[in-house]
Structures are given as structure tokens and as C-alpha cells.
Length: 196
Image (tube, rainbow, N blue to C red; front, side):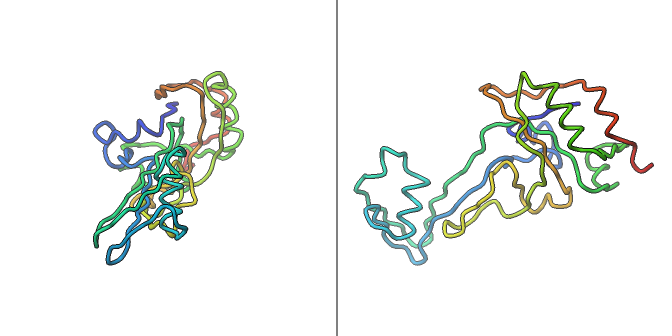
């Protein structure tokens, strides 16, 4: 099976727009002032606090800076997940999704924790298992007063909701993640053809 990477799935030119997602592992937070105005970083309103925490480097946080925003101007902070190894599955059987993915067969993983434990043991010298869980579908751009509380690696835009994705994640200390193929024959014990 193929263990992919979060950043590799941004390549929509390789994967198309069903499997690929140019915003994989990214989300944005917008800061704006209705009607425009001034943000004094030496003061304590929420705009100043947000800017100090999420935009400035630690060594810049004591700077005496004022930011003046025109009406309609927006400051956008991009949150980018580090690259991760991922394996994606769906929580629901859908012939429509299978067709979009170009698949003609489906396996049900009826013991997912045992399945991913075997994979994790097989790749233990490459990466460490970090978890398995559902992807949350919500708008990846938010206002600074309601920042995202989820890690960008477990979020996707609502347009992908129909895929009902679950994601297994592994981390490594490597700096150059590359997708790879792993053979884990014993994992088939935790799968069956679906529909039966």
C-alpha cells in the first residue's frame, strides 16, 4: 500500500482535484478592522494580541509598532502543517466516491486499530504513529476572533465532506518526506471485500 505525504497531496496536477487538494494542511486567519483603524502593538486589544502571537517572531514582540489599516484591508496569517505521512480511508461506502477515485473494488477495514498497528510496526524505523481519526470539514479561512482550534492536518474544506475521510498520521524526524510503498501482508487479516 502507498503511504502518502500531506504536502505531496497538494499536487493537484498529479492527483486531480478529487484526491489532490492544493490547500492540504493549510488554513488562514484574517485580521481586519471594519471601517479601518490603527493597531498599536504596545496596547492590549485583541487585534494587538493576535498580531503579536501569530504574526511576529518572538524577538519582534516587544517592538513599538503601529499598524494602520485602510477600510477593507486584511492581514492574513497562513498556518502550514509540517509535512506528515498519511494514509486516508473513508468511514462510509460510496459507489460515487469510488468512481471519482477511479476505483472498482473496496476493502472494509473492520479492525482499523490492528490494521494500522501492523503498518506502524512495519515502518517503525521510518516514522512513528501519531493517531487515527476523522477529518473535520469546515471553512479553512476564519476571523482572528474565532481562530481555528484544530491542527491544519486534520481539516479540509466543506466541499470534500462527501468523502467522509479518516486519516492515519505518522511523524518522522526526516526533513524530506517522500511517499513510499510498504508491504504488510498480515494487514489483510483485518480487511474484507465490501460489499460482501
